[in-house]
Length: 324
Image (cartoon, rainbow, N blue to C red; front, side, top):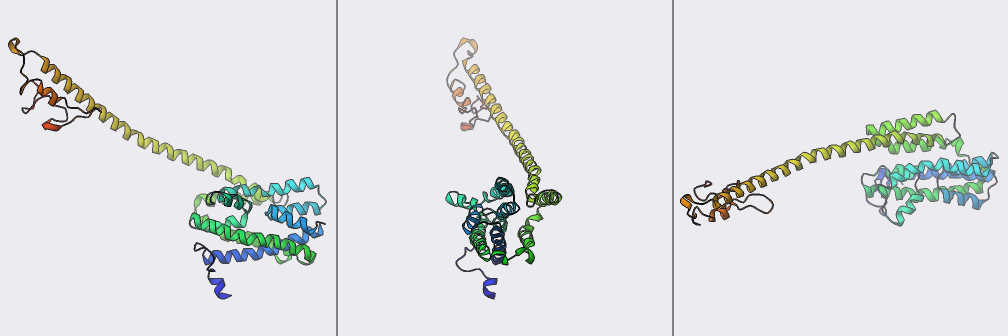
């Protein structure tokens, strides 16, 4: 037992650390105990065994099932019980967005969406890589589902013998989840967001029904999302501004080179076409039209060629280096 507690079984992925394995076992036992309490409450509210197990397997939210059964046990309307359970489970929207960052595409993502809840996402946050987070998520999901559904069935059979509230298990979940995500609080942005959500939940708990304080805490994500979007826009604008001058200068340099090359070629052509003194035609030798071919060698893109000793300005002159 000591070796099992300190090591990871060989059949688990290498990305699972001993600390993650120990945390998953503690959460498994806690969920099993709370499942017993849920099953006992469901039995006292008059639900048959198959309804208790079916609700636990289909919802797999914990708080949603407890809210639904609690409203029915208090004599509430079933429609309000369903709406209360759905409202409590809206927190899974944020959990689903977190899971989407590392979940693989295909059927595994759809199956993982059903198993998204506080415990699976919290354990996945302890992973250091995308693969490590997904493996931790799967490990917790494989332990959570049978613990919750099996605990509900066992609690239904045992009736009111088991009471998790007297054992203080209602406080175990917040403590475990906080220990799993405390490393994320090192980031100032995440720490401020979490503190804002905690304050909202603390302020709303005395005035709202049980379980809705955590839903109100999701409002802290709104300013956090706005801040993230504004920071992304500023970074994108800064990158565009830093890239524009470089492209502008490069284009201006190419235009200047092309203009110089064109001007030099026109000048060379004019000199070559000018009549020689005394009305004689200018020979095509060293100072004739052959120089035009040498002096007007410009690329099709406007950049000058400097072969045969020509300068960057496409000198029209030959070996003596001047325009004649």
